[in-house]
Length: 197
Image 1 (tube, rainbow, N blue to C red):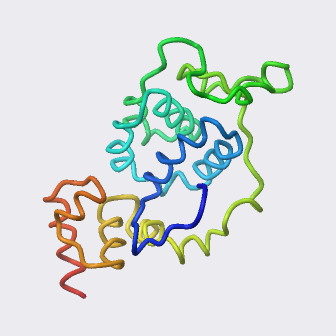
Image 2: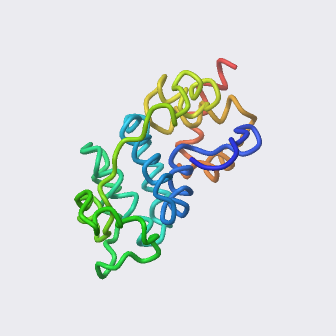
């Protein structure tokens, strides 16, 4: 979402980890928040819910509320389990959010974003960013093995394990640490690709 492109061989990072890591930047940068919104709206079908649930539990309350708000925009019922983990901040103040997050709504240019309001945050309504600001999907599939294999196997542990196996040789324990799945899941889904090389 921000900064230099990662080398997946040196530092495998799933889309969910990138989203969770970008939340801390998005709290103070509206453009990053809108880019996240645009990406999630365009590619929600490749977000792996189980991986997201594993990562979101460690996010601080405002971070969870931001993630829940962004996922809520999609209207996709598969995110309901992840949304349940979002704790609404105890009051209506924007803990840690930059003052420009709600400026346009404060002066009446746009309404407040109803999805953020639902989770206790005041943010001006989000809009989709221009596709010119996004990397073309064909290029994303070439450089990101997690997204590539999710389009082959679906957004699940099997796809993420297959992606890892194309990058390096991992033990089931290493896969568990990198992805957050169980060791049994790692063993089970590593068997097929190992058999066919």
